[in-house]
Length: 266
Image 1 (cartoon, one colour):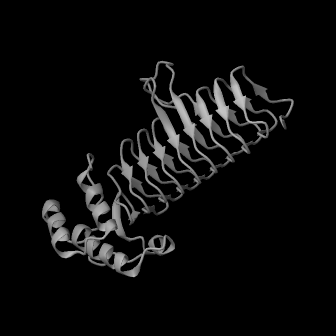
Image 2: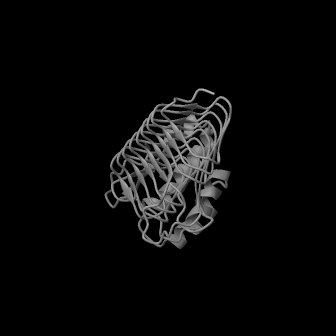
Image 3: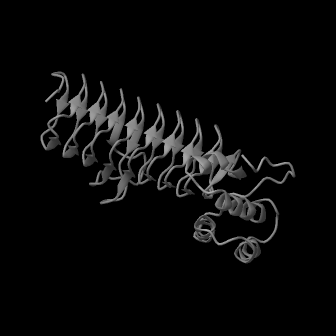
């Protein structure tokens, strides 16, 4: 087992035989770390943490530490990390704040240096979180979303699948799937590049563009706009998912810019 002699591993830690543990690493227990995972120098793994297979935990990263929440009283709560994730240097991922709750990271995600996942947040699969981005408590990020550098996500919001936030943008409302987000939760267009890379067919993309024009670029009653989309736009699975996402919003949904020249086709 390739464990550096300077690492400190607590009783109750379960390591797969091929886990690599670098110099100065601290692993608190109980915790479990799966096959093929590498933990680089001076990282910290907190108690009640489960890490799956073939993950990279970067230099100085902190995974499963106590939440930054006045309500936390030291109870047992969890951090659950899936497989094939890249967690780069100095990333922080904090465990749940409510007893028995968890912060969750799915599979094949890439968290770049100095990004943060707060307590009880969750990321799906194939999500990218770029340097310095902050994911607040209870935030839910769906599959294949892209959170650019230094973005700020307010607690309790949702980020839809294949949404992309431009660098330095921020949100305190839900961000619709398939959207390009800029400024303060402002929909600037359809994520055409992401949709094409995901293999979406041209008619499906066209239907989403039509739905976006009705929902986000004509100021008016949202309920009426949803009804128009149902009546006028081809009922593709993506359009249905977009409508369901909006109707499920509890904190409001990002809308389009007021200016007429929005770059909505990005």
